[in-house]
Image 1 (tube, rainbow, N blue to C red):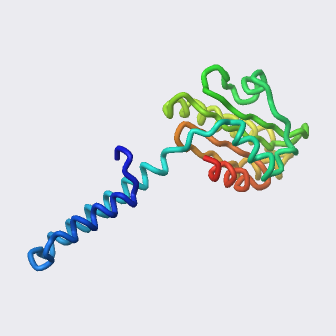
Image 2 (image 1 turned 45 degrees about the horizontal axis):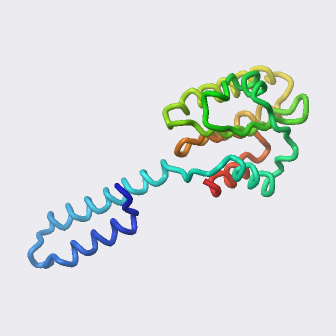
Amino acid sequence: MSGKTSADIKGISRELLGRMDPRQLGGSAITRIVLVVILIIFMASVYHSANAKDVPMDTIEHSLKTETDLGSMTRCSNRQLMQFIGLDYSNYQSYIYYKSKEALGVDELLIVKAHNRDDLTAVQDAVEQRIADQIQAFSGYGPDQVAELKNAVIYKRGNYLFYCTAKDPDQYEGVFRHVI
């Protein structure tokens, strides 16, 4: 794609079509051109949606603090990231990890910025294991916690992985998506 935006691609497509005399084109040629244009637009949108801006974690955290109820959670340390999620902070570029202040609370927010996108597979595996372990721990006596855990959001974009378990995880995700 080398720096071309979908608007650039659409403009090039219109320019090429504008040079052609429609009387010289057959129905199958027009169909092929339309399909190629649709394919190019689709590929550009997929490429764009897989990438993210390079945003400092401080900026993301500030937005989450001002636009969500992050105050109901406590910021966690490197040791707690290892203890609860099973991730070594030194393997990643940066992270934000918040956990419920309540002893029986399951609210968590984790955003990891990896050195490269391939590193996010291990993060996603750890998060999915965390959710499964928590569901097992709360099964039988914590139906509200289990419901929250089953409604957890895991989202990857660019070198970022976002994970949130909360009463309204979509609110946190919306802020994150807007920032990156």
